[in-house]
Structures are given as C-alpha cells and as structure tokens.
Length: 210
Image (spheres, rainbow, N blue to C red):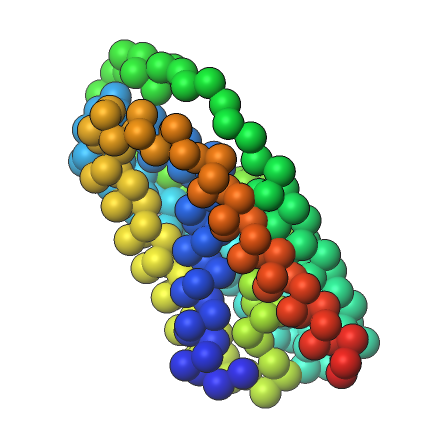
C-alpha cells in the first residue's frame, strides 16, 4: 500500500475506533464535564502520548515479523479480519441505554501533570489496544514498508487521537450537548460497526483471493 492510501486508511479506521465509546472517551467526557475543557484537553494529550506505547511495539514487531515470514503475515491478516468483524458486529448490536449523571460528580481539581498522566495510563494500559493496533498495522504495513513510513503513520495516529478527543472535550464540556449525543449513541455505534464490518470482510476476502 502506498503512503497516501495508508494515511487515508489509518485516518478512517483510527477515527472510527476513537469515536467508539471506551475508557478513553469516558475519561475525557468525565473530566470535561467536571473540570472543564482544559482538563479534557490535557487528558486528550495524555491519551495521545499513551498511544505511542502501542505504536512502538506494534510497528516494530509487525515490521520484523512480516519481513521474515509470509505465513505469519497471512495468519495475522486473518486474525485482524476476525477482530474487525467482531467489532463491527458488536457495534451493530448496540442498544439504547438510560442516561446517567455519574459524570457530574464533584471532583477535586487536578494538576496539569496529573491530568496528562491519567490519560497516558488509561490508554497505555488498555487491554484491547494490542489486538487493535495489530489489526490496523496489518492493513497498512507490507514487507517493503520503510521504518520512516511506519513512524510517520504512528505519529499521524497520535495527532488524530489528540485532535478527536480535544474536540470531544470542547463539545462535552457542555452538558446539554452530551445529553443530545446520548440519545442517538446506539445509532452512531451501529453506523460505525457497519464500517468496521466492511473493513474486516474486505481484508478477509482479499487474503482469501491472495
């Protein structure tokens, strides 16, 4: 895959994944609602920095494996396809849930370094991250991919992550916006799930033909 196609693929897939509700989203939304936009943006920065942990081991590990074994690459592609399909099905099965106000609980103001550290740890210790990044890098990395291109893709993902969650912080620091989003959250999950399912099926079909 050429660099432009890889960047476009990473942009779409990573934004879809970031938009799906998870620990990072919960943390940013809670901090934005309880402490304001500054806290949400600082947590977003920490989350983006935490992403570097997964990018480093995934990109270097993938680059090493795919350059030495076609069989390993094929196996990883099937695993990636299965994971993306699972994400898609999970999104399609999303149901409406009752709204809650737990994010409005009073929280003691946190320092800049603590807020960044909170975001970093939240992302770096996400148990679902390794398989996700393995799946994503499988889509865009080939045996001929130079290290600088892999590093560029990783840095771009960090920028996307920071940009998305900063936007979330700006929007969800307004409680009325969060309430409106909650009403249609399950429909958003279903739309994102259908795209993830399409990516997984596309990867599975392309590998089967190959």
